[in-house]
Image 1 (tube, rainbow, N blue to C red):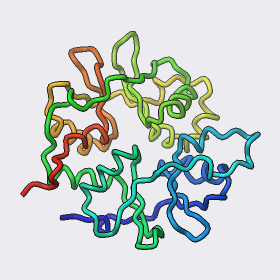
Image 2: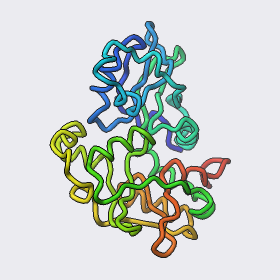
Image 3: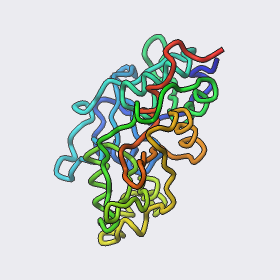
Length: 255
């Protein structure tokens, strides 16, 4: 059984009285979507995510992170990865803080790192339609790139299907923006650039009647975070890692 200590990585950590501008700088172009917040004794009190950090305006540069802290997914070094993944799902996070007996952070575990291991040890149950998100937020091919940034802030997702005349023509992600030199650089240099210029035109999709275990394997094989769910030529849902984890057997790994 694989445990938290097998996947420990360094994660961003801030103090409760650090300014939100610092959180924005830490999270804006990094691989992490969350930074963990500690009290004045270094103990975990919660996390702040990229959505809150990017909402900050220049006129509020003195605001601290304390007012934005949410309950974090957390784990001990010996905790099995299945339980950690479910804690991330419940908290809506892509990482979990690993803490010691005094609640001091010793590292973190990323969902992207443990998801393949979970799938190799467990068969997810059910069909895609059982777990997919049915309210799909989409971008239009002729939307300007800053519109994607606005969607990320509003909904907290990192990737969006791109439509043209009700037809799926691509997918645009935060990764695509970072590939252009970072989110901020992409926004500054692409004010009038349409989404179609930056999107990935080859889209991996699944069907509502596909076993969720098969769809989850597609997420791993293609190193993506979200799968559009297609019924014929119509998009009817989207499946992400958190959605797929709902099919995890509650008793833990098989065998």
